[in-house]
Length: 279
Ligand SMILES: O=C(O)CCC(=O)C(=O)O
Ligand SMILES: [Fe+2]
Image (tube, rainbow, N blue to C red; front, side, top):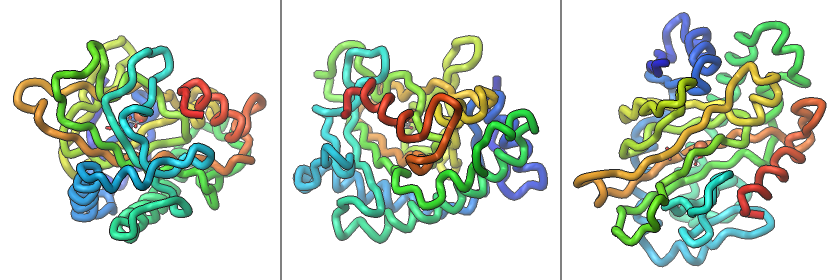
């Protein structure tokens, strides 16, 4: 298995990209329309936010899940006992956000949402007929008007040496949503699990956009598209002193969207959040 960046502007981009998603659960895009300068600015501005006391004024709301999640309440991946070594902020257009960061992050959210609709159209167009008949509505329609789509700004602090043994930046997990879009982070570490069980580095060239399948699209496609396990490993050597910032946008359907005979988007999400221990 190999992960190669697909040129967004090439005539075969859609086909090659969807083929990669089918084979690996991941697709990597270069020459895409998301502004790299803005991603870079977001990383800088949010690193400052995470390094300030100000973050504690934006503690997440339990019911609505918007705001800052400190390291002490960070996720425990399904099947793991140790909390991940990370803190993060959940941005929703309707949720709390520091005034000085709002316009920039909202612009990124909206532009990436537009791209997501196009990528979902690519996925639908290149799904075999016997798979696309399972989609209860066009995939890009499923996220239309959804208030659940979540932009997570993640801060993995430098390692202090006091971390619990076995704790890692993000333990192996699958994403819950339809698809996830994230720009290459400012530091490496993201790995995807190949079919043979080995871990592969996701090409982290700054400027790449990484897309992965989540459980909800796996469910809606009758497992044609695999929701692939991934993780973020700890830095070693001199890199331990470096923080890592990343910016996944988790595309969530409207709660009423029917995914399969067994689940709506809402029932699926509730089940998974309970397992994660964040509800
Ligand atoms: O930080 C990353 O590169 C990936 C984060 C991730 O997989 C997640 O938050 O679900
Ligand atoms: Fe993930």
